[in-house]
Amino acid sequence: MEYRALRGVEDLIPPESLKYERVVDTFKEVVERAGFSEVILPIFEEARLFTRSVGESSDIVNKEMYVFEDKGGRVVALRPEGTASAVRAYVEHGVYAKEPFTKWFYVGPMFRFERPQAGRKRQFFQAGAEVFGFSQPGADAELIKVADTVLKELSVEAVLEINSIGCRECRPAYREALINFLKSKLDSLCPDCVRRFEKNPLRVLDCKNESCQMVVSQAPKITDYLCSECREHYQKVKEYLNLLKVEFKENPFLVRGLDYYTRTVFEFKSSQLGAQSTVLAGGRYDYLVEEIGGPQVPALGFAMGIDRVMLLIPELEVERRGVFVVTRGEEAYRRGLEVVSFLRSKGIRAEIDHRQGSFKAQMKAADRLKVKFAVIIGQDEVEGEFYSLKELSTGKQERVESLKELLARL
View 1 (cartoon, rainbow, N blue to C red):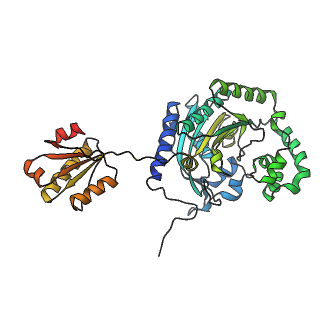
View 2 (spheres, rainbow, N blue to C red):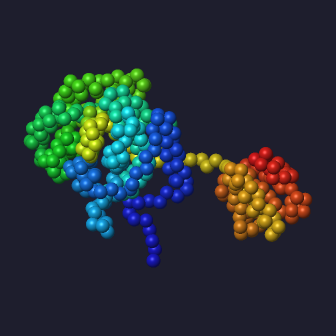
View 3 (cartoon, rainbow, N blue to C red):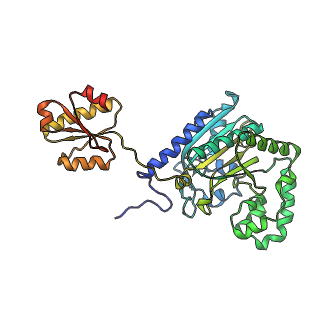
C-alpha cells in the first residue's frame, strides 16, 4: 500500500525546510528586538472560542474549520488562526493584572479546510505578533513598522494598504448605509455575499469575486462615517507611519475577513502571488479581550503567512560548513569516531560515513553534503599518528599533528 500526505498538507524537506527556518529566524530576530516574547499556544481549542471571536459570519467558521468531538464529548477545533488562542491565554492566566502592557509573538501551524492552491494550504504556517494594553495610535504605527521591517529584511516586496473600520459608536451608521446600498445589488452578488448581507454586510467588502468587487467599488466609504475619535486616531496612525518612513496607500474598502477588528486594519500585498496576494495582515481588536471573558483591554496584532513568504524569497545557496571524517580500515574508523565526538563537543558540526566505502565514495558523500572540510584518516595517518585536513572548495590539504591543532585550524 502506498501512503501519501493528505491533499492540502505538504512536507517541508531540505532545502525548503531551510527556507522555512530562515523566514522564522528573521521574524523572531525582528520582533524580539522590538520587545516581543514568545508564547507557545495549543494546536486545538474548544470550537466555541473561534466561533465567538472570529465571528459566525466569517468563512473560517462557516466553511473552513476542522471541528470534531473528542473522546470526552467536547467539541474542539484545530486552530484556524492564532489571535483567539493568544487572547484566551492572556485572559486565562490573568496577564492583564501582572503587566502594564504585553507583547507576544507565536509561530506554528494553522488549519483551514480550503481548496488547495499556491499560497493556500489546509495546514499552513503563520508567524504572529500581538500587543495588549495600548489604545494609542502610536502603537498601531509601531506594530506596522515591525511588520514592514520583517518583510524588508526578508527582501519581500509588498504594498501596504491601510484603513479604519471605526468602532461600536460609528460603525452602526455605516452598516445601515451599506445595507441600503446593497439591497438593490443583491442580484449582482455571489451566493456567499448574499448570505453575508444577511449576517454581516461588511464582509461583502472583503469578497474577492470580480462581480462583487465591481459592486463594492461604488459602495459608501466607511471613512466617511467615522466618529471624531476614530477619525483622529486614523489620522494620527498615518502621521506616525510617515514619521517612521513606512510607505502606505489607503484602501477605504479594506475590512479584513475576521469579525473582531476595530479601527485600524492593514494588509501587505504582493503582486507576485496572484489571487492569494496578502502575505501579512492585521489590525486593532479593542473589544476581543472583553468578549472572551477578560476586562476591557485594547489590543492589536498581525499574522504573516510563512508559506506565502517562502514563495517570494529566492532559493537559498547552501553554505559549505562542518567537517566530514573520511576513514579507511578499522583502526582509522575508531580514530574517526573519536574525532567526530571531539569536534561535536567543541561545537563543530561533524559527520562520518559508517559504511566505510572507498576514499572516492566518501569524498563524494562529503561534497554532496556541502561540507567545508574533510579530515582524512588512512593507513599513513594511523601509522604516523597525524591527520590530513582538506578544504573541499579549494582542494588544499595540510598535515595536522593533534586534535588540538585540528581544532585551531578549523
